[in-house]
View 1 (cartoon, rainbow, N blue to C red):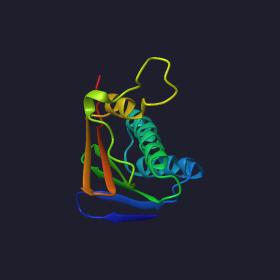
View 2: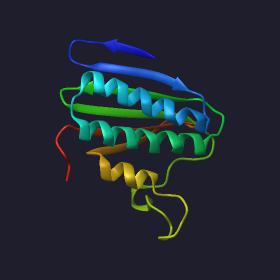
View 3: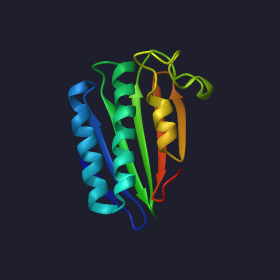
View 4: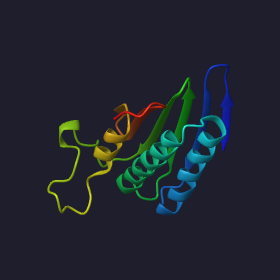
Length: 142
């Protein structure tokens, strides 16, 4: 794990194996980083759930392929970015975030992330790279 220190921004940057066995580590790393630098417990808990959902999506999109986490902390805002490397296509458009029907066993991850954050962005910088970025602020959003 590396923590980059700049005068106004703290950054955690880490890569994980693309297996479900890394989900605990990614949550623990984010929570530990935020506990050290951001006292807002609500923000810590939301960030932990958000990173779990985003990491799970990265693993499901490309099992066995490493994914990258970047956490930036700046003046009460946390930005979580998960970069995955996949050939399976981009996430659905925002209007399709959520399950196909109420009893669907999956498909809620991006909807949950959207509800817990102030902003979610999805980028596809190359054909096989997807970056999902979620921004959370200290003050409760609802």
